[in-house]
View: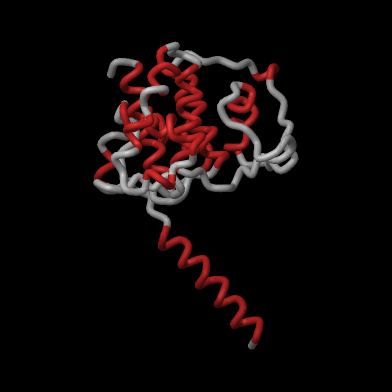
Length: 208
């Protein structure tokens, strides 16, 4: 009897997890996501949970796409997987490339935390590091971007190191607040939010 109950509990847990996964983007996002990004996700990780939190591994996969479309290139022979906690997930193969490009870093010299969630302010920082490699004006523009953050009621939640990154992304329309008054810098960036942000950058930089 105990074994039967245990099996039923596991089945209910799996069903509840499946119920929360949403394989379609929200209405606000679906018209902005360029088709290459869902195709990339599906080819690498399979089904997409658009409203789910973006992992650090998946983040590397998306930013690699932006980096490549903007003209970045790193030869496979130039990278090594130096993090001991990176597993065999297909999305993990993008980690050493983005680390080599000095865009995404480990949480220590030997750990990457590939399944940890990416915060909204962290994603802004990664994007700014990407753009700085292709546009010399980005660094100068960032120095004047801090005031954009102050317009939000939760501006105090933005970490000091991330203020210019978040402000730059706000000024350029890459990110928007989660409401008229909140930016939620410490909240998880969702898959669809990340796809929309990356799409906006690609479309702007490639003149689409």
